[in-house]
Length: 72
Ligand SMILES: [Zn+2]
Image (cartoon, rainbow, N blue to C red; front, side):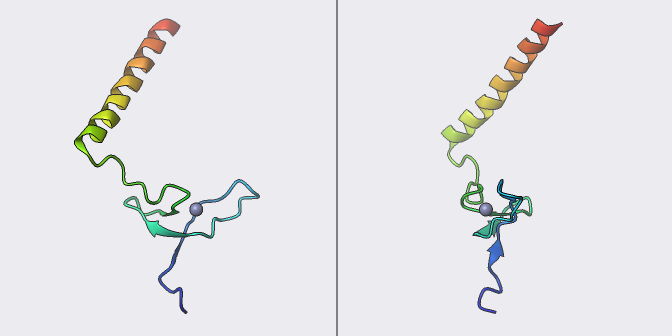
């Protein structure tokens, strides 16, 4: 029982829906992810990064609205 507390990444890989067996960490949303599958990403930390991230959402929403206008 050496790896009793080892968390296993629960992502299914593209190859035959085989689970990823890499050791991962528990994320905020309760999922277990290895470093390959975004487990170590914690989102923007610095004020600059947070602003950039918020900007992307605004940009996306503006783009979506303008696309809707074109369609109708
Ligand atoms: Zn994984």
